[in-house]
Image (cartoon, rainbow, N blue to C red; front, side, top):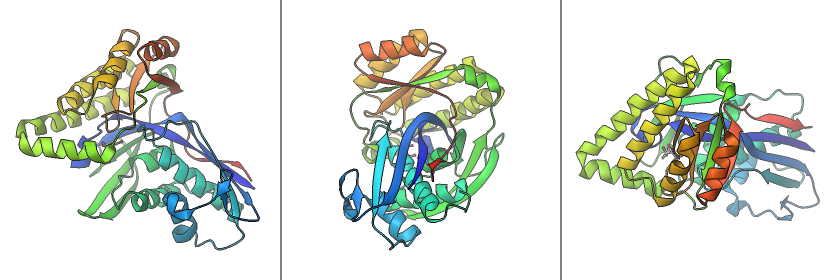
Length: 325
Ligand code: MEV
């Protein structure tokens, strides 16, 4: 028997702009996915026979990464994340499963988070027709605050570089960490789920079409890049007020790129009176918003009253951990 936990993530700054090579800042949250593995008479996943084609992340890790053809396994998954909501649930599943299988097969070998991040990224890419940025998988594997960009980012600690051959050509990313002062620990994030999935592929295509047909919208992407840099400076200095202001500014630019919707606007508006800042997070068109606050219970109530599902977390949870061997 072996088990591992991997956290979900929330994008603080830079969604959509990251697709155009600008930096994005993501943070690991307290909630995540726990996977347990044990030997079993036949292959099982959550009490049902395991069908590899329906679970491409898991089958990629079993077959292509570990080349495992040993005894059948029983796989149990416990998730605290809303799925298809932009919280990185599939990345957390890949990391937790990869870490649990590693601990199951080779308990004496220490886990290497960078290797795990790369493994989970390859699983995401396989499951998403070759298109996946390493943001979710790296944040879940490493924990803390992660900056993903087309190049090195000033004021951050470089962790690793990675690349992927996508249907549109080879993409290269630099994955960096941000060291933050303890004062960041005074704040909370409250995520508000609209109850609707976030169609990432469709929203990314919508932004690509908008910026090619209305070239002034390219200015919004450049503005998001500037806001991301200001947000990074605020994070590194532990300046929560400035962090909140940057989140509000980022939301305005995402609205202008037409990726917000009525439900997201309602949840953002409801949180703002009790927050330092609030914005949609991830691809938009549904999914989640996030508020930065020192009063998580008031914000959670406001989100619930406005029709959303709240989830409160401290900022910068630990990365993937082995929870049982
Ligand atoms: C989705 O969580 C974030 C986007 O920037 C897409 C991506 O980075 O691949 C919208």
